[in-house]
Image (cartoon, rainbow, N blue to C red; front, side, top):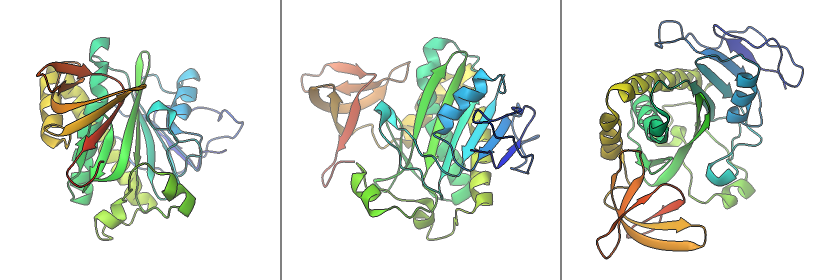
Length: 285
């Protein structure tokens, strides 16, 4: 499993399966990000978050890192769910070493959502919605998702975005939500070529850096921006936590990024884990 390309200040001498790295051009990051990340690109990996963990263990990413693969064969969503990741999508992990306290790490899924929203608006000229805690939607269809994991002292921000996907029929049937890709959402303007996906990855990395800097000064600004872009707040939601299920109205976020849900008796309950289904007039998303 050889990396197709790798470029950055830091490079691992050998891939964990014995393949050497090829110093082919990925995309320029020098000067574009506040701290240039170590950049690694692979033809195929189990998942970019898993690959990031290996690279951290090898000491290849002391501060910042960007891992991107053309395909994942064990892509994961929340709760270990399989994430379909064929060729034609943007499958990446951005590695940060946060300067904020550990108590604020719960804000990184929201921060990442805001950053991805900004990058897609800039590069694709479309507006997307953010569903708590980690879904990227376009007109109620799933465009992508975010999976943040802590590997102290780093945070791994895993991002999957459908670029131009030809789903196998069995994969489509197994999906919990109707998918959409950028090619369709932009009427073909985003062709999901390798260069376009690489440019989007760079734009996302830059936006993450900008919002990470904002988080050090104002966590409220991150929450406020996410709330403005969200399709969750104000909606009736179904909360699934283990075998327990209840519903209420999503009202706001608390200081740590938990969803505040108002029950029928008026009690405001913070939700920090579990599945959230949005109950809409026509369908759930």
